[in-house]
Length: 364
Ligand SMILES: Cc1ncc(COP(=O)(O)O)c(C=O)c1O
Image (tube, rainbow, N blue to C red; front, side, top):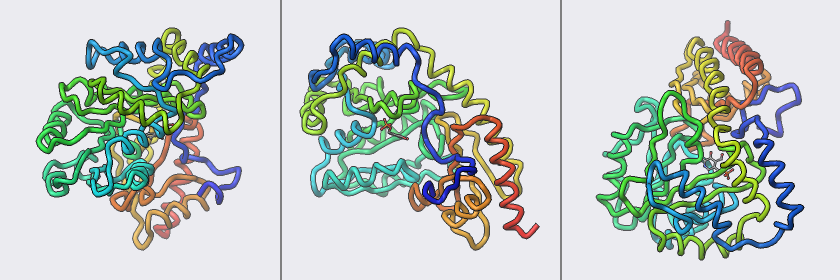
């Protein structure tokens, strides 16, 4: 899709904030480099930063410290680490579908099998416990949860979290909880799997979205049990040896001096969400849940005779780049993902084009 797109196409394709990292973080990275922080760090990462992260999560799980956190070079790295640490050949992992496309291949690399649990439009994209029960067996080692979700934007209530937690406990599963959009939520407080008293929980997070630094590649894994973190650190050594020295100082500064940055971004994303959902829901044949997190909408957008991929190509010919739902797994068929990581003016102009393409396809 990206290769086919011309320069004049309005792109709803990329899942990254159209903001720059906080200026204080950029300055701090520069200063840290000048001060000689250009070396290997310990594998687990800078203790001051790990402590800062543990304290920032204290509202969920009080009493943690640096022994609960391992720095990684992104959420992507954190995910691979968790799968390599937990999964052996012959074991399987329960995964959401539609999904962030790395999950399945990551489990394959670790030698395991993915079992996908559908999160369907008619259930507000929330997993159903009876479906999870039908997929789990004695070889299931973990379940991955992702709220707020990419691509659906779905979030959970604490009641839903408790049911999903009880399911994992019942089957003695590890919970890998991908919460990289935890600071981009609207109208609700983020509901986490950390702080529930279940030690077999691995929280994945990243500063890519939180501080708009996708290209910097920095994230972390946090677990209530330091013994587990020690195993994660061992694996991290074989993946990247450590994270980037100067960057860790920059993130530390962002915590101290730009702590509200994600909430400021989220205000703008919320205005865009309202705009795009309003436009989509006003289009005949289109139906869109109003998501409470992340920066994606995943409307049902079906045109008889066209797959979501064919529809995405039609949209591209009409001047709009968006991702076909099938790119996120079978249950994404019939949907298109729009990332509202562009200006409100571009969103409006893009929606005019979507409307025109759909009208043409309906023969109007
Ligand atoms: C759900 C989810 N998890 C993890 C990531 C990985 O983020 P990063 O590797 O930039 O930290 C992304 C990126 O889009 C994502 O959407």
